[in-house]
Length: 635
Ligand code: VG1
Ligand code: CO
Image: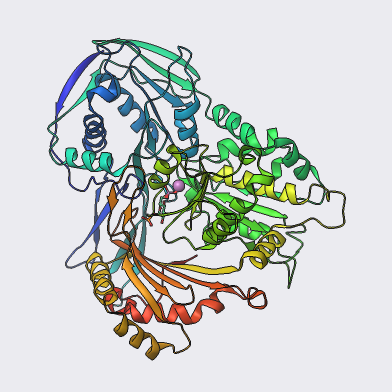
């Protein structure tokens, strides 16, 4: 092949957010016909528009610099990049484009998971662990995913509505489908802000990109190595099995035998919902083939380009089938609700864990992600061989509840509070200061890789349940997920927790709300006067600030990471703007209350939090600024 330089010009809005660049696959603009109310659709496909992906990829190569790409001439072993993702629509085209651009930019070899599939945690594992046939190691990776955002080809739903005037009106509603890309570094973790800022700044000045001409599309459905020759010498594309490196890593972390014993106990039933995301490619290998779960325990485990039309977000709203399978009650349709249920998001870095509820009536028991990381940290040393030497430290993102803080204190562990987004944990882990970490947004993980890890979290829970039942598998009743969580609360106290999301609100209104809260926060007397007027039974705010983080390893500072109101009794209100949305603005409101009294830890969390919720909504003038009387999603 030869290298072609293609003229291009900057495209607005290519700024990577909390986790890479994410955009709608289409933007539909409705133009109403003046007379006949006929709606015309003008569709702009964002990622598929000319040069969009190319500009971003070239800007990344430019940000990394020729030294990082180790062009062939400088170093005969050359650079190796991984390119794969959750398999969403447009991934296959994107992979071919990136292969050709990498070849033209002097990359020596590209590694692709079979069919372009690799979960985000598997990419991290591959970058860190995989060794190529020629002894090569990866230098970085492009991950193609928009995580839990839906995917699929452009679509719109057209409905016709008859008007009283006799005319018909066509309503066209665009389906929200996203595509995304992010770059991970040599440690297997997301590029730090210094790099993403540079990528963004390059996108604003880009004039040309390089692409290989005469390089055929590579068949990524077949495992094997293809060699090509370009101006710099040899270029390889290595298509490999998506699961084996990851499975090997999991087997080195957990005691698969003890989990297998648990799964084979007739008293333990299990269900895993991949929501048609890439987790399906791992679930069968790990849960069924390695651990002996029944094939019927897998739900939606065939990865699909459009996630089967669903929203691949593992929460109680979107993981509908799992929630139904866990069962409201024993019915004819659902004779035996599983003991343990879990789900993953599109790229398999998130997890939700559910248990069967035995008290009251049979209703699923939800483990909050903030509790999940605390419980994993509290049990890791006993239940997971990888941690048997002890934990180096633990960390959580700022809006995540303080359940982990209490565990850290009890166990005398180093503890860190970092801004939202996994990239902040990576530095601590590289520096040997953190073993287990998590976010309230269904993300849990450890220093085995540099991304959060959905399947790892489920294995960690299975390992804990297996450990708690190790002498009990023949007993009358197993220690359940619910028992485990309740035991934890009675030892450490309970953090009632909820998150309200206001999605796609007017960006101006959202900014004003945040500005108002920043200003208000500087006058605590006024804050407390307002609160007394709303709910005299809520405790005082003793501190408020805009969260700022100084990385203890590299000293870099991240500002404006959310507004915190801290109460005397340990309650917290946190407000922040999402950095992953692809439309308007999303306001997230995090509400938390600590309860140590063992008699008060069994309440329904929305009930327990009602006074604080009322304070949060009125204090922030949420409805005034957003026009919304209720959040889009509550978790
Ligand atoms: C959200 C979550 C954050 C998470 C990020 C990426 O970000 O709140 O905790 O790290 O998504 O997760 P934001 O900025 O929208 O609040 V994933 O699974 O989407 O890569
Ligand atoms: Co994700």
